[in-house]
Image 1 (cartoon, rainbow, N blue to C red):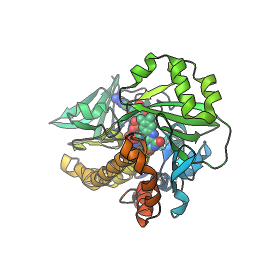
Image 2: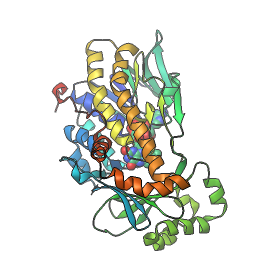
Image 3: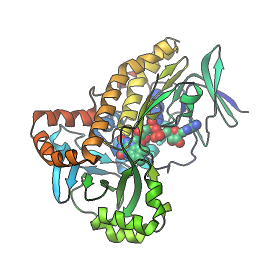
Image 4: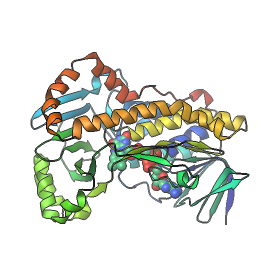
Length: 403
Ligand SMILES: Cc1cc2nc3c(=O)[nH]c(=O)nc-3n(C[C@H](O)[C@H](O)[C@H](O)COP(=O)(O)OP(=O)(O)OC[C@H]3O[C@@H](n4cnc5c(N)ncnc54)[C@H](O)[C@@H]3O)c2cc1C
């Protein structure tokens, strides 16, 4: 078995793991990144990036490159009922330069981050390495095992997503919250450019639908359905599902009929949120979805994952400098970050209920409430919070020792 050693073993090459790897490499540390997938074209995980995450990428020097690989700037998001725009969250009202929602496909983001990591000699990338065990010494985590690889590390960073193996191997529980009473069926359709770009939540006679334009020439559609309701709907056959979807997005009805041929053309996502009970153990720290999981509503998960990496970076640099990677030291990351993440989880749950839920009272009050909310100063504050979080995060570029 090949045995190697590194300062930090990062498990998971999603937005959190790759951003953290780059931050640590720039600060002169060695990093081994283990990623179970061999490809950057992974299961669909959303692509709308808030301004806070854009700022982190810009400070890392990778935003422009990622955008050049293919992205759309959206002016904001809208809640639309029938023909009426109930709420127009216009990000152009926020201060620049990142006053847009960026539709940045994850392959573009991950490719750019990985290329920047690869420019560092202290970086080792192990694609196809699925971590299955933690190494321990005197009760503390000191590395990982992935198939034939044994990687010894001063710290292990678990960035392996919503079903985190690292979290489970460390014996850390997670609380799952059914913050949304919907699952989402995702699919892309070819679609011509239609001018102004906004992310829309559309409410019609049936289930609400999420719609936004995606690079290069398609529209991404998320058709919501009650938790666990897919089996019943699918039981009626693809023709019926197709017609329901065509009714929800009538302007794309022809493309729906042409491109959704089997139920296999649709990806069902179990939407949930949650948090790990603790984010650190001796020699181990969790970040991104493995510490706190996010669904698609409100587009916060990638944003928070990138911000996590920026907040964890100085904690890890200090811990390795002080030769103290105890749970108490690494737990400083959780102390700094959990309050902001909890606030954003609450905000996401509120957004989900306000925009997607169905009941007679909410349906009657929604238009009036949306009108009132969008005229108050509170609205601007909420917009700012959605864009940047309660505590805007800056990258500690002063810790960079390597270009
Ligand atoms: C359908 C859907 C749509 C979404 N839309 C949006 C959106 O528009 N905007 C937004 O901000 N958020 C969105 N989210 C949430 C967002 O995708 C996540 O919050 C974000 O990807 C978290 O990043 P991460 O790096 O922590 O985890 P992930 O992106 O999940 O990355 C984890 C990585 O770890 C790897 N891995 C897993 N297990 C192992 C193992 N044992 N060994 C090695 N590697 C492993 C995986 O292959 C993966 O590459 C969406 C989520 C879903 C499910």
